[in-house]
Picture (cartoon, helix red, strand yellow):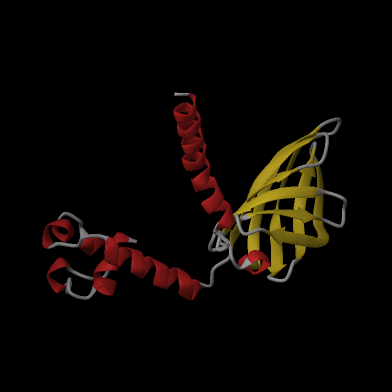
Length: 192
């Protein structure tokens, strides 16, 4: 009976730990490009509190080179004192699990989580005495935005009834009777 209980306990441990072992063996991860996941210029917005100073908020841009280097230029308000054109540089790392870190030349340090496609970064400052966090969103070229809008519009089920309920004559130069629903680009203009 004791052997049976020990065997069952070992089997339960084995089955419980197997998923973690398989997950640990996963070498692909969500961000297999590592530092190359971040490449391009991002809009940065963040804020919070610096103990002993007061509220802080900042807005600006950060550029990642895809090789572990960054340049960050921003405007900051610290307890109402405004500083414009502040520029700092620093190395960054992105791990396979899409977590990462950034150390900037002004002595500030950050932990971050990166979207697998590199489009968005959520960060938090990790220095003692700070409660500051924010978001970065990659700039997109206007041609990418147009293509994205049209691609998304294709996913919207379009039918004559949906078009008839929209007063198209006021919003665009098209008339409902002239809309060719077989060409989604033309129909997508009504939903932008």
